[in-house]
Image (tube, rainbow, N blue to C red):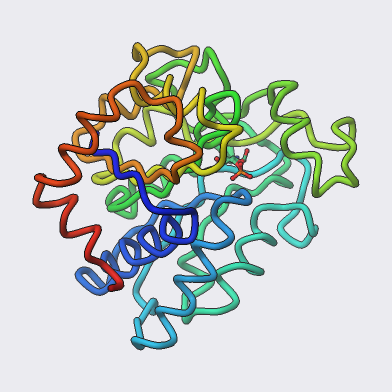
Length: 266
Ligand code: GLP
């Protein structure tokens, strides 16, 4: 795991967008793993800007989103398919047929989860997986105690997640669907590269556990410590509880890959 503490959350978004853009520039038929949530909104805004300014061609790109609520169709405003249309799909030349979000309205959600896993494999696996971190340590919707080897499946959401994600549901946790289809932690670990982005003081404690704590199903984000090629971008607030700060800053000043990332967009 390589950790980069950025000057502020704007720079986090800039670097994440630059890494995604660079992936597509370097491999126009990339398979991207995408995420939702507030953290991602500024990243997609920036990516759309870079794509427009630099003429990045998404025509051959395939995407797989991490998760979707069970019971919501892609037409509903709270669905992650809708989120992706609003923040990215509607603003770059992605071929809709190549964009994949689990179908939350599928009659058989378990079968949809298995088929989704097969579609990822059929596309040759994910080149670069973008990830946020839930306040309870979840990645995708792999809640605490999700098996580290879990695959795409139907999960029951944690109480903390219903509260965290109530914003789109009139602020009422009772209106948030209680189940979701999510890529498994094991599925996520198979992406060839992983990029986790964490911002804000509310996530400082859980970010420290995910980055420095023991690898544990109690903190699904900690599974990324096992990923062979994972970058974590943090703003100073999210980095504020890290104990290995000196070691991280040393790497930031000396590691060639981290130096190259810090030069992006300058
Ligand atoms: C949702 C998504 C997660 C995401 C999390 C963080 O729960 N399923 O994939 O990491 O939100 O959201 P935010 O960026 O809004 O804190």
